[in-house]
Amino acid sequence: MECRKLELTINSANDLRGVRRIFKMKVYAKVLIGGNQGMEKRTPVDKHGQTNPAWNYTMKYSISEQWLEHHGTMLVVKLYCKRKLGDRYIGEVHQSLKQLYDYASPLGGSAVVWFPVQMGCAESQGQLCFSYKFGEKVAIEKLMLAESIASFLATGPGGAI
Image (cartoon, rainbow, N blue to C red; front, side, top):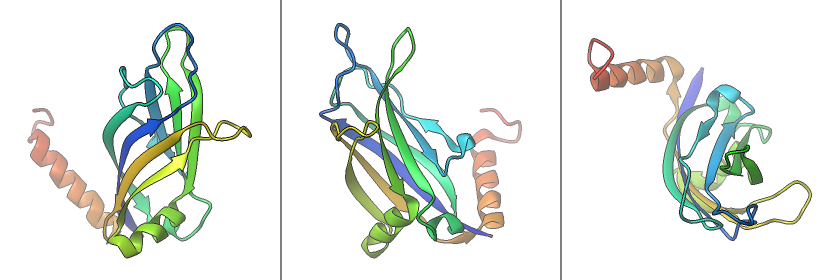
């Protein structure tokens, strides 16, 4: 089985819908690929940008080559406002991995894109900017070996730095 590395950087959002009336909005993003909860990652909370947060936070994934062949595998970025009484949903962006891959391929495998943030059936509220880069196709066994070696070199033989 073959796969590719995906390096995804959640850069920023602008003109988001304000979901707090009294306190400042503290926004973070959750990223999910292909509906796989095990692959969910989060950005840190932006405490200063409010409706215009910036993260410039990079996440790395290993993506099955099969996921890039069908429009059904989605990259989903959901935006939330951090609150003590439970986080409040702001909106989300859905994009097909195949569409992202097809767009970036002629550009050397990487791109910077802006997409409208949707909230249910309502019209869009702001935009989300992210950049991404797809790596070369590699057999999953080679990728797992490379990741194991990199982890060993980073942590040492005892498993901790």
